[in-house]
Length: 156
Image (cartoon, rainbow, N blue to C red; front, side, top):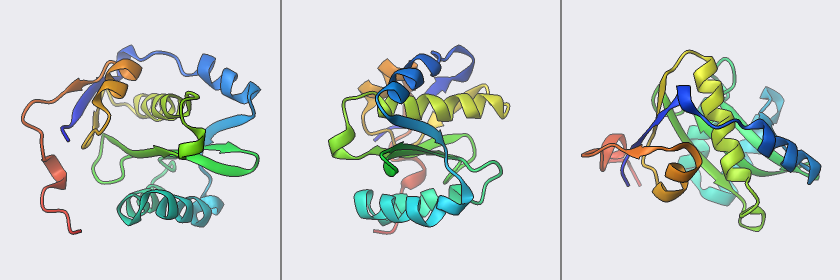
């Protein structure tokens, strides 16, 4: 999976989608420190240990660099930035039953806007799986020659 590059100074707004999701009972927001164990456990059980490790790292950042989507008091999605490398977006995931509702895009845009607010002009999406999604959601472009990138030799 290649890395992708996103121009943070030309992002679509997140708020219209956020308002739509709130009206449907979904809240997309920055995670809080006391939720760390709940979020990391959910990520581990839903997506595995590698992503849980990256997610856990984000709770040590100031501000916390993990966003969550919640519905009915439960986590249904997450997105992180600055987990493995500075200026990197990811990992991110949405529970299978909650997909196709815009949560992934809202989480992505919330993180990218937070990165822009922290002073970055560009963001790297590390090891981007769904490249078409990132291209449509944030006009991300593939970084040629970036595969396998920083995850080369990752212990499995």
